Structure formats: C-alpha cells, structure tokens
Image (cartoon, rainbow, N blue to C red; front, side, top):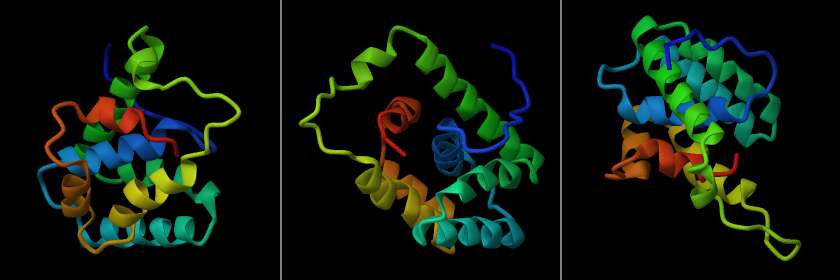
Length: 141
C-alpha cells in the first residue's frame, strides 16, 4: 500500500486510533504548540465533545514527520480492517454485550490526550505490545 495523505472530514473511526499509535511510535518530541493543541482536544473530548476528535487529523498534519507516522498507522488500521484478519480481533457481539466505547475511551484515549507528555503516556498505556495496530484496532472509540 502506498503512502497517502489522510484527508478526512468529520469523524473517522480510525483517526483517534491512528493518533494514539502515532504518539506511541513517534520518537522525536512533539513541539509544545502541538502538545497544547492535543491537550485542548483531549479536554474537549473529556467534556463530551466527541466531534472534536476530527481535529486530531489536523494536528497530526502540522508536523511533517509526525504526519508520516500518523498516516502509516492509519493505513495499517485500514489494511487490517479490509483483511479477513480483522475477525480474529473483534469478538462476537450480541444484545447482552455491554458497550465498551466509554471504558476504552477513558482508559486508552483520554489519558495521553490530556497529559503534558502525551507520547510517554501512550507508550506506557500500550506497553510492549508487539503489534500496536492489532491492539489498538480492538479498542472501541
């Protein structure tokens, strides 16, 4: 799959996941300005303004190297989603399955987005997972 610029409008299911993966993978520190923007979006999301998640795409694109990392994570998620492999990562759901969106959001997305060092928090949260894409793909937010 060739690298493409992610240009999306509105909410996209993979944007927050790709952003989380990019935070964990990106080695260079983000600029203080980008961190402030990430924290602003994180605070908005914590306040229930979930439509603000689409701003993560704009933030990612402000730094060329981070944008490359974000785009790669997005493409990896999309590739997994389009493959037959995705079925092994998504458990069967029925009417008795409780929703996980809130728990996954609160446990995985909110902490790095609201922290002054989002990259460090993302790395700690995702641990030493051998495949970040597979792990994050399972999250529901």
